[in-house]
Length: 126
Image (tube, rainbow, N blue to C red; front, side, top):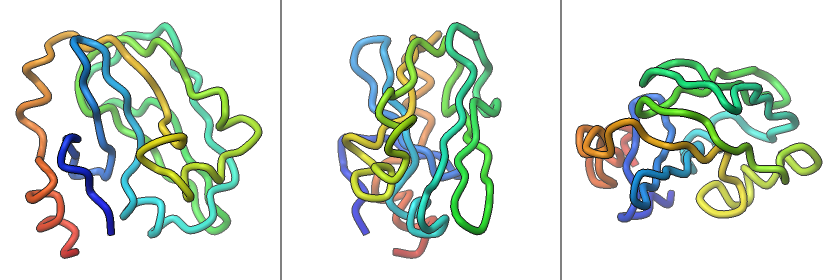
């Protein structure tokens, strides 16, 4: 499995990439493999300010629906438009074209409290 070193990770299997105070968030390679074929992503939180660990959407696979949890507090600015027509891109490219939201982070230092790639690898036993 692939866990890029430049990202941070949550126990709920989301990743976050911080650039200044703007973060891109998605689900990990481990999460998409566990879910299986993703058929729908629902995110209706654009413009909302949410606290860390709040549910910001759901991802639906053939056999299950799973909540998506925000890694840090902030405001959701954008949902990946590709997910509407091609949710399966989360399976094929979870860290690239399969990103889910972009947000403005309230406190960029909060990202430091999340796991690095090595800690996340230990969590999932990869």
